[in-house]
Image 1 (cartoon, rainbow, N blue to C red):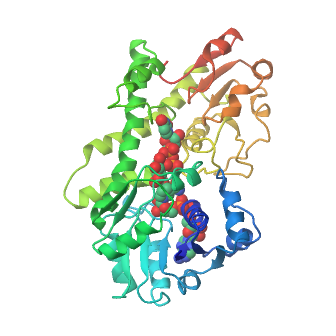
Image 2: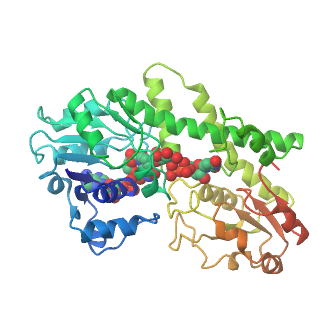
Length: 422
Ligand code: NAD
Ligand code: UGA
């Protein structure tokens, strides 16, 4: 079993650390956030992720998982150092590599000889080489091993991946990284660093393309009087198309698709290719936020000024507490900018976010509301008491931006219902 340092204890780092320890490795996970490390050492999990708490506890109790402050501290005994730090969007749309470079600078002098540094952060083509340069160590190999987990099912996705991608020019380092996944059943693709880095970006871009495509199809369905649910069902049975990632909604968001799609446009542009298809995908997504706002405005008769809007959902999708780049928050902002008085509830958001003070329960935001807007697909919203909701509202109107609710049942209760593409 290997000695692994994981740098960064966020969604990817904490999951990576806990899962590697559950595979039997000895893991030290480092963060610069002292408070986060203190909470983790006290057994407190700072993010909502199914199954994470149990395997963190198991690793800590078994002595195979520790949390420390500072990347250099974790690197001292590491055979492998996994970089899981942020790569946010820079001002020109490119990925900001300053966290990666800072982490590499911190671990460079501390790593033992023959260690392998593994990039799990999403980084542009050429970053493996950039990390090599910053490390300045001839005896340390750098390998790209991008991560494909989804938030909300991170532990499941890490331990049951569709594939493991390893990019390296050093065959023996690649084989050593592959061996860390002992116990995980998945195809392993070993390739060069540029191809591995490209696989990560184009996978996210393709998924974003599918969603923008279906959101555009939903607009067509509305125009021609078709039902997008049946249309997607009919498309998806074609095995070449499939049903996954074809749920229309308020637009895609989260900490990755928005920054990664823009970064890929920038990477292509810098390399001399204008990725117009992906630009279109981003434009369709930006339009989708506005389309939801228009639906709300149409429901209330053409103006949002002074209109009381109840909102269910603030996270970028269900089963996570993550609100980074959430379409829901964008749409709440657009509604407020047009004069609406917005009150929002989300089961996973209790603290104020982007100037929104979340309500304590789903019914209170319906009190006196002219319209209710569903922006995140939390399952619990389906089972609320809609007679009570109708009784509380000034007028029973719903814009269901996730096609989550039972339209005929709501219409029987007297609601005016608008979904997406139906
Ligand atoms: P995050 O913001 O949740 O976590 C990053 C952590 O790194 C933070 O806790 C931060 O304090 C810490 N950190 C920053 N610099 C550090 C340093 N020098 N030493 C130690 N710790 C440091 O980010 P995330 O969502 O885990 O994403 C990390 C990377 O993984 C990004 O490149 C992202 O694109 C990629 N990724 C994310 C997901 C996802 O679902 N969130 C999935 C696949 C890939
Ligand atoms: C996504 C990818 O699915 C992961 O494979 C990848 O590792 C990760 O980005 C990353 O690189 O960070 P995640 O951001 O957790 O994972 O979220 P998704 O489940 O992909 O959803 C992204 C957005 O698309 C959400 O806003 C979601 O509501 C939306 N979506 C998704 C739809 O509107 N329709 C769909 O059919 C699917």
